[in-house]
Image (cartoon, rainbow, N blue to C red; front, side, top):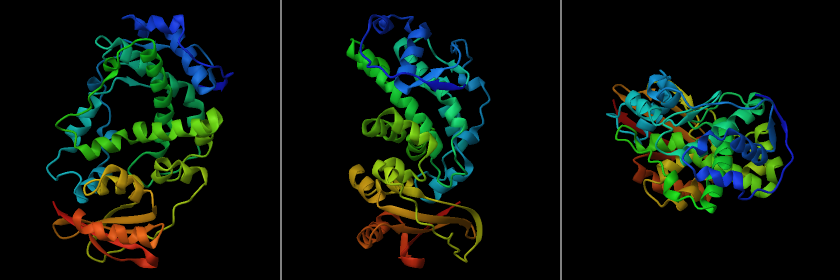
Length: 347
C-alpha cells in the first residue's frame, strides 16, 4: 500500500489509547492506525482493514522452506549448532503454529486470550502495511547470509513501533506479563530460533538506534540504503560509515563435491562464539568480522564446511584462531591474510 509523509507529533498517553486496557481493545483500528502513522511518519493511502477471522496459521499451508531453508539448516548442522537428528520440517511447522499475525493484508490469529498483546501485534502488522511501498522500492539483491538483511530492516522497524506501543500501554497501567510470549518448542533448535528472531531482535535494536541518532529520517534511509551485512545491523556505526564487507573468494577444498556456497557473516559467527564465551565477548569479537566466504561439500559420507574469514585486525584474527579448537573447528592460514576454518559432521 502506498503511503506519504505524515507530520510528526509528540506521543503520550491519551484517553483513546487508555481505552485499550479494555478486552475489545484490538478492534479499535482507528487508534492503532493513528499511532502507526505518527511513529513512522507515513500516511496510509486508504483506511486499513484488519482481518480478525483469519484461520489458525497451521491451516495456511505455508512453505516450510521460508522458515527453515534447507541450505541454512545444512550450514547450522555442519557447524554443530543443530544436531543431525533435528527435524527441519517439524521445526518449521512448530514455528508456523506460533504465528500471531501476518501482512499484507493484515491478519491476526489467536485473538481471544491476549487482547492487549493482540493490539501490539496489530500495530506491528499495520507498520508493515504502511511500509509496503518503500519495501517494494528497497534496492536489495540476493542475500548471501543465512539471516535476512532486508527482513531485519522491515521487521526491525515494525518491532520498533510495536514495542513503543506496548511501552505506552504499560505506562498507563497494563501489566508487562500481558505481553509475554514464549517461543520455545522442543522441535525448534535454539540456533534456528535465533536465526528466525534476528530480524525482530537485532533488527529492532538497529532501527531504534537509527531513530535515536537521526530520527525517522534516518530510519527511512535504512530502506533506501539497506545494510550490506549482519555486521552493519549488529554495529550501527559500521552501517553509518558505509563500511563494505571485504570480498573473499569461495574456498575450494579439493576434497569433495561442492554442495553450497555463501557467507557466514558476523551474526552466525556470534552464535558460534557464544558456545565458548559470554554473549558480550562474542559480540565484541564477531563485530570485528570484515568478510568471509564458505563452501559446504560432500566429503565421502561426511558433510564438511570450509570458511575463509577476514577479521579487521591481526589481533582479532589470532583471538579467533585461539578459540577455534573449542568450537571443534580446525584453523589454518587462508588466502590473503584470511583465517581458514573447517569442520566435518557425519550425515
